[in-house]
Amino acid sequence: MEIALIAFFVFLVAWTCYAVTISQGKEEFLCQDCRFNDPEQCLKVERPRAILCTSYRNDKEPVSESEYKR
Ligand code: SF4
Image 1 (cartoon, rainbow, N blue to C red):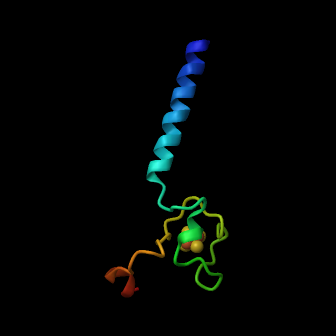
Image 2 (image 1 turned 90 degrees about the horizontal axis):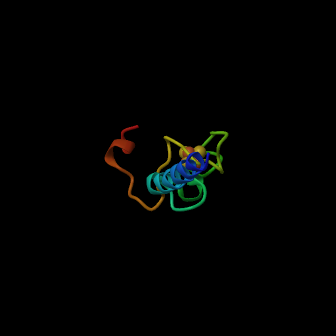
Image 3 (image 1 turned 90 degrees about the vertical axis):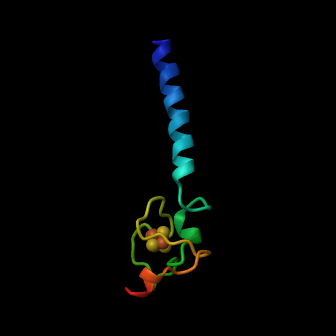
């Protein structure tokens, strides 16, 4: 039983480290440094507390050429 608890704890720590390293934003929520964090530009229900978002774009990075073509 103790081995299972230790394995679970190790897994939990590893998963937390992995989640922190793949996180896109610098803040607690992605919306805090997303360039679309405005009610007129983003209609997603997750805003302003999105943790995962495929539309996230960092507001400090320049707009890419492919985004201009949209
Ligand atoms: S696009 Fe995603 S990350 Fe950006 S403001 Fe909207 S919900 Fe938040």
